[in-house]
Image (cartoon, rainbow, N blue to C red; front, side):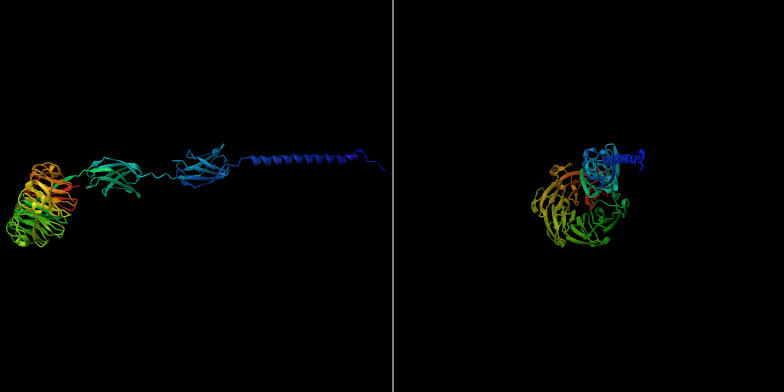
Length: 531
């Protein structure tokens, strides 16, 4: 048998070496793979923001940011909104909890972790509602049409969306910003706070002190005479008193023409009743009066007349039918109808219940007449001055009367230069006036000079025809007297202190506050508007 060659064993050695090498290579590759996987596990994830919730809100809103790559250490996450820092209150790898800061504004929320930065979708910032306040007004006083600047916060920048009133009267808003309103004070506003309403919130300003503007014009009349017509085309002859009805018609005791005249609100003058001097009941011009001094109107449109020289109270219906209510010859007697007597009565007033009050001048008494013509003495006795009840009181030539809604009667006590008040129980006191003179003041500190006319408005203010002082005076319910209009004797129209009267004797006040004056010796009816 033949022995194999030597090198024949080499054929088997080479594969053993190759197998070892392969094994080694596999081991190295495995190590490299494991190392690579570990490096991938240790690499930080990408920084992303998937969502924010909520996506709208104001300061203090807590927002959750969902994403990847956040640090679990809250302070390591830098979060801002328009460069304003949003405090991070909680953090995980996939969620941050933040708080929206003050005045952040709308924009993208930015998150920075290390050197990486990302942004969210838009966060809509809702500013906190600014409270409605008023801190000041300027000026704080003025007449109608004064422009006032209201300073505060929370106003609507659209002028029409701010409602401003004073004593429930609307003020026109001409300009508006978030912190200022410009408004115009209306006529007849009165003093009071300005109320500002925006939305459903209302606030009040400091008090605005309203200055009343008084203006005197001539409603009708010119020189002495008799003529129908409009305005200055009409003529009167010493008109003594005036009364106004609910429709604004003014009735005049046109004394020296022996007529009762009617003036419409447009100034058209006609004769309601009367013609030549005399004493006759009848309709329109068929009726006769004898120097009628007093006139009053009731709620039904009837007119009552102090037919002075006939010593009677007469009634005129809206159709002009004249009848005698009470009185006969001159004298002093209580009674019914013609059994009663007056002595140069000069003023009448009608209460809401139809009771007639009479200034029985030369008897120095105030008489009371029921709608059925029953006459009694309400207050007064002989000429003099005394407070008291009923006949214990004294007057001196009381020229006119008026009655308020509460049944109080006010008397122009001409000879005593006082305005007296009589309660419904007949208690007589002095509201204002003392000695003869011309002085403003309260109660007896005030002075009048033969006041012939008196009227009361809905608020209880008394207006006085202060005849010999040539002025209209105003008395508050508390007795404070001021000049309302007039200065020296004359006939000038104009503002309160520039206007002039010439022995005004009668006065009345309409429901809207308009004052009408019987300007006797100017033979005119004057109109006074205060607003």
